[in-house]
Length: 393
Image (tube, rainbow, N blue to C red; front, side, top):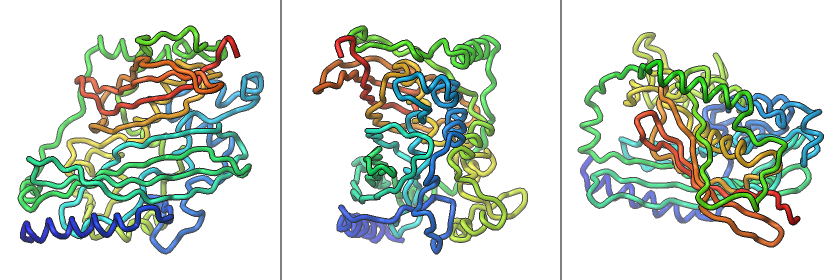
């Protein structure tokens, strides 16, 4: 394909997609069904149970009894079990199906989501969702041969009490490799082994994980009052990793995204043209396997399997939840996926208080958060808005 035609096709795609801005579109369960099956309205879980909440909490390594112990939870401000922040991802996918430019060399990435939350999610809640299309923006750099596009959807979740629970502004990066870049992509990538950590690093990791599990980072039932928070105050570091298969599987099991055998094949048939072939068996593999096995990720051109973007975001939310305590409420978390967290990597979540304000009866704290790999690379960052209790309320 000539470069001029390649550019023209992408420009036409952007124009035609932006003519749909504001339209309400279907929600498909990514990887979970073929195009003919729209059962369930595209939701992973229409009904929430204490079990689904518990599985999601465990997938975050979150041992807070607020999410699992009814005796403890009934004494809290919420008077019962609630779900951890970003449980919304167990209801609806933020990685939305859509059209891509009609050119070869397309790569698609989760760019992160802005989570605006109004209500807690509880057992026996049920949901419906609205997916409003926000269009395509060209964010290509002038010096780059390739084109970088960002697609946005606003997904609103409503519960069975007609409450707006959350609006999730999902962002998807669409990278269109130029004809020149596609030639380079065909060159085989060298497989990379997972890092090996020193005893000193592992001791530090295990000590941090002990503190998380035993609740020493967790504010819990002791309120963190707005008046006691200072701008510049640091959020304690929480470590996770090395990210591995059991971590990814626990998240997929919690969300309910998994399929096997014929139902896996039913969702896989439409992906056959992508040619994801297992080099050992010769069989087709589900595209989701780039998030579970180094081998398939390397076939796809990655150095190792890639951690789920939603996992990276939810773990930042978990660090905030530990700091704010059971009476706090995470109102906004605007996450940006900057780099991949690969299988075998460590991730350190940290943050700082950047602002304090009041909005009517709300006492608000603003945070800057980041998650950093063991090599110092920030893979995910976020801005958060937290509502805290006030001594004067």
